[in-house]
Structure formats: structure tokens, C-alpha cells
Image 1 (cartoon, rainbow, N blue to C red):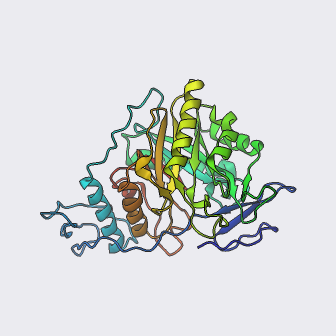
Image 2 (tube, rainbow, N blue to C red):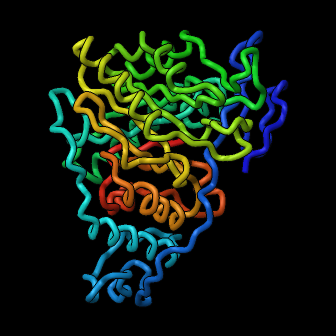
Length: 367
């Protein structure tokens, strides 16, 4: 659980990240994604090597011993991590709902023929993600290296780089309008857009609505969303439908919120003759996105459900299986935290490891 404190001095307190948007504006508050909820992996057994799970026990409902599955060998991985990856792989292979029977991609669609690798954050805070943690030239150079790594790991799916900017930031105080959110200035969006242009990259605009809603926040970004290389993200963690302060508990969006946003983006693409938009929806608990099966697909909007919790590899694999793979929408994403995923000594997840998941994530985000 996050604890909200005053950020008048732009202090960082526990997982609450604060940064001043301007000298006369409300303080911008960005909150790191919550650790994944503790859960136990599906019970499987393996031989002495954590890299192989040849003797994995059948999952419930299996009538015979499943085929052997191998996973990449990474120094520092525990057997628990490897078995959780095997469990996630096997669950995906058994699931007949993938790939989702969605609309045929229109001309100009990015997914699924390409993979997006994005850097996330806000330049006003060094603690909200890699996008603002280091100078822009160093950040872009590091993104180049990640793009190269993913291209090497899966040459069949070329990588498109992206910057993912939190443009509406959840607040610990109500602000002048009582909405517990701060809208970033257009000048900041233009700055990050110019950084993206240096790499012919996409720009995602991410929204943490607080006590506001998507109907009020998305249309304000229309001038940017009319550009063919600008896309959208929604963060249910900070959508506080029950009136709580952002960070006091994990928030939620429902299918109607997503469907409204899809309809808006579809109409925008149709009216302005744009290629399909990509909509990223973050998720690391079941309640963050209610009614996922009621989300309607549209050929002009490609929906990614992004597993964005942090924690040990086994927790991340389990959450991908439980909250993304088991509730298909359209495409999948996976988030990697440079700091939070490694603070207990776990090596950072690698592209070959993540690519063993089924379905393979086509949107990768680094924070």
C-alpha cells in the first residue's frame, strides 16, 4: 500500500514520487507501481537443474505428463523463478483463446508484426522512471541498446522504439478542482515528442485520472493524438472510483471506460485518416480492470494489456499468467523495472526469458 504525504518540498517518501511541474503549480506526484500481490505458483516439480522442468507435474485437468519445457539459464535465477516461468509457458500453450480472434490489422497497424519497446516516466522526476532519470541523450542511447537486444532476441518481430510519458499525474492532494490529478503542460509533451523524433520513435501519453475520468482527460490530448505517431495509455491503479486518495489503495477501470476510450480513438483515426492507434492499459491485479471480457475490439485501435507490477521474476510470471494471459483482450505487454525488480538481488529479466511467455508480449515497457 502506498502512503501519501505532503510533497511541498518535492520529497520522495516511500513509494510516492513527487516532482515540481512548475514553481506556481500544484506539485506533480507520480507513484511507482505497487509490488505484485503475494501468491503461490502452480505446484510443479523439476529435476536438479532449475533450467529444465522435464519432470513438471501435470496442471489440474491434464490427463498426461506434459512435454518438457526449457527456459533460459540466467545466473542468479532461483528454481522458483524457473518453475513459475514453466507454469506460465504451459498455461499459455494450453489456452485455446490465444491468439485472440480480432479484426484484421489495417494498413499502418503496428501490432502484431512489430514489437514496441518503450521507456516510461516523466522528465520532471528522476524517480518516476527512466524517461526522466538521466539526461535525454543518455536515455535515448540506453533505449537504443534495449531495442538492439530485443531485435537480437526475436529478429522476426522488428522493434519500434517509444517514449511513454505520464501526462496526467495522480496527486496526494485534491488540487484546486478537487480531482487529485495534475495535467502536465503542453510544452512538456512537445519536449518529449522532440526526443522521440530523434529516434523516429512513438510517443505514448499516459493518464492517471485520480478523481477525474477518461471522458474528461482523453479529449484534452486530441491535438497530440491527431499525430500518427502518438498513442495512449490508461493506468487503472490511480483511478479512484471510490473517492480514496490515489495511492491509498489500488484503483480500477472497467470495460465501459476502455470501450469509451476505444470509441474516441477510433473516431479520431477515422476522421483524420490516421493509422490505427495503440491503447495500453496497465494491469497487475484482477480488480484493476473489471469486465475485461466485455471490452470491444475495433480495427482502428489496438489494445495492449500490460502486466506492470514489480517484484521477483516468479511473481511477475504468475501475474502475467493470472491477469493477462487468462483474461484475453487483444495483445499483451510486460513491464520491467530497472530498480524495483532488482532491489532484492534478482537479475533484471532478459528478452529471451520474457519471450518464452505465451502469448509473446508485443509491448515492452521499462521504468
